[in-house]
Length: 414
Ligand code: 3BY
Ligand code: FES
Ligand code: FE
Image (cartoon, rainbow, N blue to C red):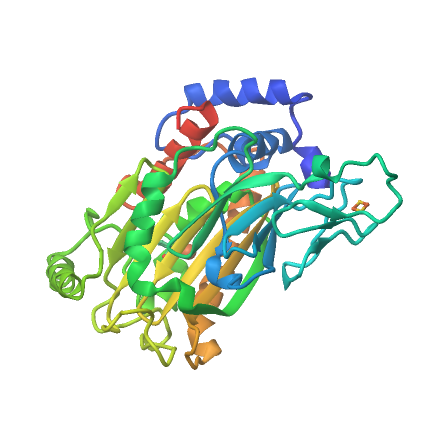
């Protein structure tokens, strides 16, 4: 545990932390930021990991990243290494990336391609379905390899997105969201895309501060000059701030989307998932500095460059912008109470020519700015003077929704 973590460790046992968290939440006024330990106490962080990240469906990557047999990607969900691999039947499987011999991590790279899964420690070898194939002679003749298959992780895919749930039990229901995701993503034909650029940044901030920051644009005018060249400061078609000009422009674009058969109606699955297509600023096409497309091809069956951006929210760990010539997917993975990894991937048509600097400039800048905001937020929250403060109902309702979801998830009411 880091020095910072030790400083904020207020509860001796997990049980004490859980009952303290439940008591605080029961008394917590809706629409206010959380009490300090939710943002910096390592026992509360453990609670988040056990209740949310080791249970809920998490976005891990895109199917286009592992297009053929043996392609894999790995993620760390807190202390849990997870392996996602394309098997011989074209399916995608997820396993705990933990060898059944003495527990070594098996795949050590973020991405790769393998024929089989061989542990680097003593070369136990598993096939792509996780069955143990080979241990050499050392285990003796009575050894039963069938008893040592890799432990599976629940894995589902839709619309090019891959989700996993680490729960050993029944995972939360997700079918309805996945079929809608398939429908809304159909125009993009994500199987024929490739990752043109990728970045992972480490933020010295609790994961909830990273998500809270993303759920509002109250901070945009003060921090995001590049993003505001194309992005409107609200991302809800019913936003109370929407002007008559916006409503007129939205209706014009909605007619165009209907004509092209592009799904756009806002749809929500509880507070966890939301899909909505929003226009960008009038006259701009995508989130680049000049507002013009950055890839030589539009995605899938899309015809119009000016398609706005379809935003897909998946709590607890992803938000996304799907545009005419590229999509940008975001993944949040907590590391410790005050450390979070944010991964951004830009995907384009697999045969497109792309100016990567033009493609990535706006969101590299935006991510840097958001990192700074989340880190400064964390440092203030660590102060003895911090007390919960009120969110704006008009500018921060997305944050209120996120905290409502968090409270439900933690209280088991989700
Ligand atoms: O565009 C986003 O992903 C979010 C929503 C509004 C502010 N923020 C940059
Ligand atoms: Fe994997 Fe020994 S720990 S082969
Ligand atoms: Fe931001």
